[in-house]
Image 1: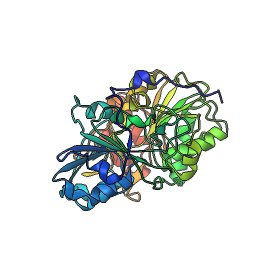
Image 2: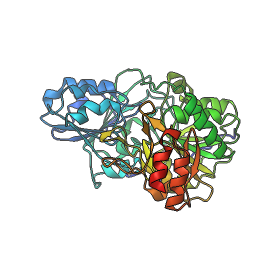
Image 3: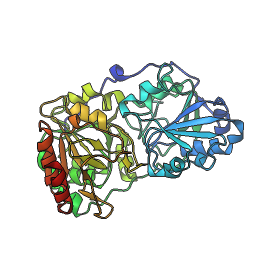
Image 4: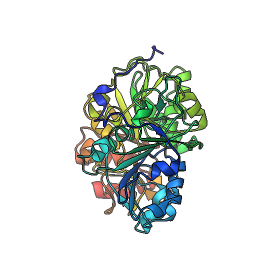
Length: 439
């Protein structure tokens, strides 16, 4: 692997309020600064400051109204026990942890691409916040702390929010990159130790392995990858072990990246941006991964404007986005957010990466998923999207669709041809019905 490049992040950073107090405080003192009626951003994914939220819930009598805004939560917050008294909840990305809140009417959803997070929450943005609750590492030898496993969706909030309170956790790995910050980047730092939530490595089934074989054949040596969460992306990464000079520039890294780096497949030697470096916004995985990324110069954590920005992503040679979908219609329109009327996810970074992939002649956007759901009872290749479903990707952005039955290359195909291509990779049990409507 090439000696990792130190990246200049300044072109990708949003506005900053400048130095803050950087005060070490108890949780009660820090949280008392939250304004009644305020809107509070809570960092999500594997960096949610659960200990701070527990204290916030314990002190809830301080406020008559407080809105908590967050992204993809891995598990429930303590404040979910008291919806409306005083807490209101808004999410940018639905997850299983939020299902009962949505069904009971205590949760609202703000559709948003990952790359739009920072602009949305600025003082002059469409949804400004009054405060941010985040999590950081203990100070390193340089005297700085790190945003650790979640930088992309958090950094600009730390720079711009009127009030920033950090849970300083010695278990948070110190990651290099744009998330390394001095203590005076924060108003308050509260020393609270908690384990970092782990996401187990998914075990691929036969369908995932078949999908991975097809996908790996589409990906050239030297490609720069972005991928999502789940058994299918994991299986695809594992199937790339024989490739060479792959790179990462995208939303996340996971445990599979360790094996690709150590096996020599993932070197970043052909990357244009951050040569020899894995560039990511989030770290999502097990303790093995958290130990591996701690002070590892191979990884550089990026702000969302770089990890998901169309220009820097499209500049990567042979960029390949690997994502999934709930259903794909015969015209190519994609729903990756809802099962019927039940929300299960959000746009996240998928539109960002599909747009970036559309900007390069040798780039690819791959949607990879099993052909059926509900134990084989439901086809995920459908005549048209469910009437309650959002359109995550419009049909003109869809490129390659892969199931266990093959690859449909839709870019450049007229509507009837793409319907035929998608029907051919649907499960055989559903092909006749799809042929009847696409003829």
